[in-house]
Image (cartoon, rainbow, N blue to C red; front, side, top):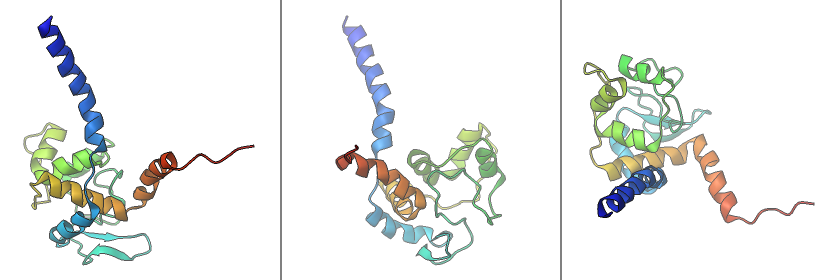
Length: 165
């Protein structure tokens, strides 16, 4: 009986873990500071051409709208590596968990996603601290158009529903 209860407890925890992980978010203000490391290669420029973060670097793609975007598909950026384009061709879209794993070790991430030990990355810089990666993701998300859409349900839940006739 004790074994069954332990197994049941572990199964419950395993099922709950993804929901908990999805709720994890970073600190956008702290992410702005960490993004200083990323701006050597990346910029966040909106659709109107306004630089929101970075120094208009062009080594890496513009990160505006990255959350929820299919990997390797930013328009007018041709420097994506074959492995990242291959991941994108599967329909893979960026979310916080995958972003955190990717920036910790881009080559390892791509090798795992593609099940290809020879997969290579164009991104050589790493953010090994999970907190830094989550904060950078939160910062990029705060500047991206998807941030408004993601915030809307939370705002709606906090506000009373409008009266209908």
